[in-house]
Image (tube, rainbow, N blue to C red):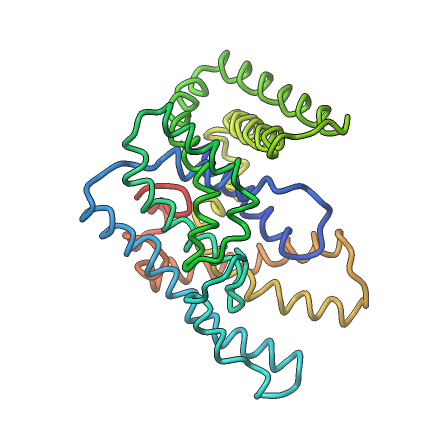
Length: 325
């Protein structure tokens, strides 16, 4: 699914921009990744499942988490001009019982990997149920979103229960969607129909009508994901989008390392300009992506096992955030 790599590529670049000064895009990027992860989830036995997750999630998480300790120490030293500014307790953030989803202060984006591990562990049991029951569970996760957000848990279990909704729907409709997008005529119909649904949801919201437990907002997210996936399928196999393909195949590395470049760049740019602006943020996001290229190549070549790759050749490995290896 080449267009899935392209979808992941543009979304992970979007996430880099989101982590600096940016316009308000709405919360579309995280649903895309969880939905796509569900599309390629495979039910297997417990032994195979956890053996694979050790290689593709747990080891990369620990690798990026540990390397983020000296990074955050340097940033705190930069900000406060004191070697005592670093809070050593933050190393144990991962074991905190809290209701937030962004409390991994060493490297905040790593919340995604921790949440994905919990979701996939839940899914190993729940996704064996009939599709109607799976969809019902997804709706319940959306229905109780506010309650879940206020429920302090270990390892972001509350967070995972909510995001399970997108993962589960991706699992249920992913393969039929892929089959439809393999047909050129159907591809256009899927794109047109889903983008119209996005506009209908936006119009509903603009009218100020009551959104019952945010179901319209979530329908908008799902319609956007389907339309965005269909749109990227038009670029399937095209050579002139190789940059998106590269970042899509290496989205896990980008997730774990981009703050190491983006945060210092942000400090430097604010020192030079004294302002925050979306276009400055966009420029920093582009610069960060360019500077990540050698980082990605080095990690793929030197420590592929530590970044979720099972093959030393970057050309043959298929990462990552969404794909089952």
